[in-house]
Length: 104
Image 1 (cartoon, rainbow, N blue to C red):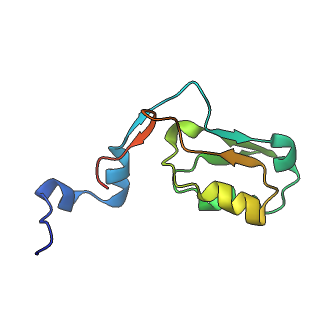
Image 2 (image 1 turned 180 degrees about the vertical axis):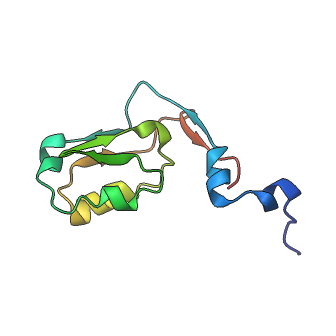
């Protein structure tokens, strides 16, 4: 069976543009929690480098996180556990909340 042909709109959009059309439904119940005390003592802070949505940023010595743009990859949880201080508690958002991907 031949591969499905992409529409002209899909062919023109870059990966960044495709991510930009995703929709987010924010939940009042957090699905990401960071123990900032543990985070302050982390030398590597791998979450800063692995998150493609840049949910985690460093402001001075403080790690700031904004889960509203999270694309639910979960890599932050894995690298924090394996290479950081296990400060990130992450789970998928409840059903009906989180990211709705428009282009895969």
